[in-house]
Image (cartoon, rainbow, N blue to C red; front, top):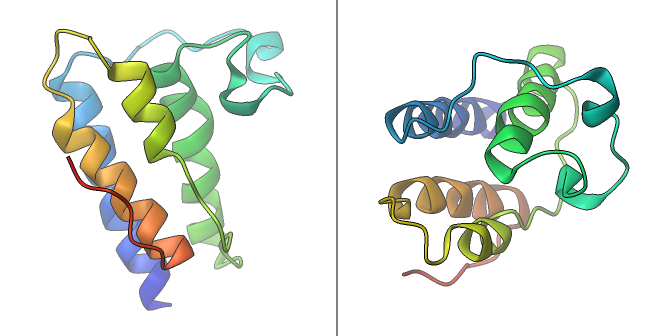
Length: 112
């Protein structure tokens, strides 16, 4: 259960960072866009939309249901790639995503 609590705290940090970076959207993507089968929904959503409308809700649902969490997560490298060269201070957001990767996989991710 400790892992679920730790994950919930990180998810709240991610949401806070998305809002502070003004990457949070009030418009929900279409059901078709949300139904993408591609990794990170790259064909239908921006990375921040994927975080907000797919990644966060799925993890919150797992926490609420006290469901087993995935044993592997590697979202931080995608964030590093997406935000590379973007004129936003995304290091804290990427650091929170790295925390999730470490929490779920137990692996040490590279730090900036």
